Length: 183
Length: 75
Image (cartoon, rainbow over all chains, first blue to last red):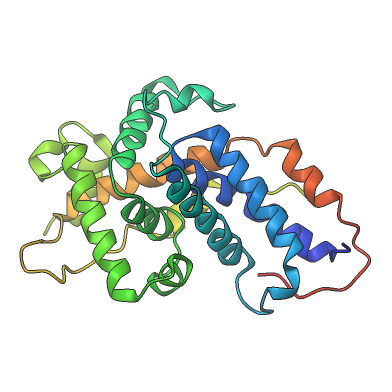
């Protein structure tokens, strides 16, 4: 199937986003790579169904997450990296100081429901709008906002960030609080 | 084919995690400092994943398609 060079470039640009989303959603790098490959292949096979002027990346995200949920229904369980050692399987390890934060976040995300996790990742990490996230997830705006709210609250609890007193010596947070403090 | 560059600053430009006012009375919004910290950590986690090198197999999938036909515009 012949594909325009510009379309190929857009899809290539989307790959890091697709992969980060798939890894965060599934918690398993090997499976995430399978999801990304399947999304790219399916996207290429169905390019005639892509609507011009809409987001190719959002379209590929939709294909990927739909495949994830299809697999979940088949397996009747979420695929997770149960030992929380995903960081060690990446090509580039987080810096030593950041490795614990990375592991904490990965472990905490895995404890959210898949629906909450994907909503939070799309809006909070990928930066898509609530409307686009609702479209990708096949739901409405209110549901997406509710999932994100619950996900944030739960994540903060899991990471012991439930109150500002728990922030401890995080320099970046102290700096942020200083900037937001009343004069 | 140009390799994409992932700039961590791009994620930072998105801004803080959007504050979602609770639609349920028993779920108060997170304190601003907590929300900021959470957003920062989430984006740092995600940025690290995005900066993992792109697998050659993905590039081969796209390169296998010959660009001879004009198609719909992408994003």
